[in-house]
Length: 126
Image (cartoon, rainbow, N blue to C red; front, side, top):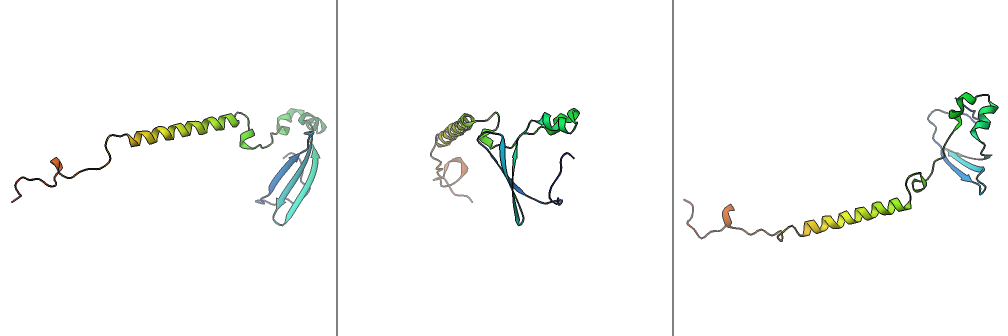
């Protein structure tokens, strides 16, 4: 394991974490909430290679890289335009389906009689 913990670690403990980035993009204010406790901490981002060099672990540089979580709309590959396009396509499909079901030929009313039984003026059954 890389790094250390400055608090007691308990297996299965759940926390809710929030990170707030400074306007410069280097400073981070972190909030961690667990049962009965809220911890705030402040730190600064440093390049992963600096950490790897400090611990003489340049061969394990990939272990130090991380990408922060981001909201869905700001994730790579999907943007506001993509979401709007998906909503437009769904709307068009719904319009097509509603026009298909309403123009299926006939009113949906079925009369009695005809070859399937019902009233007829012919003779009765004996």
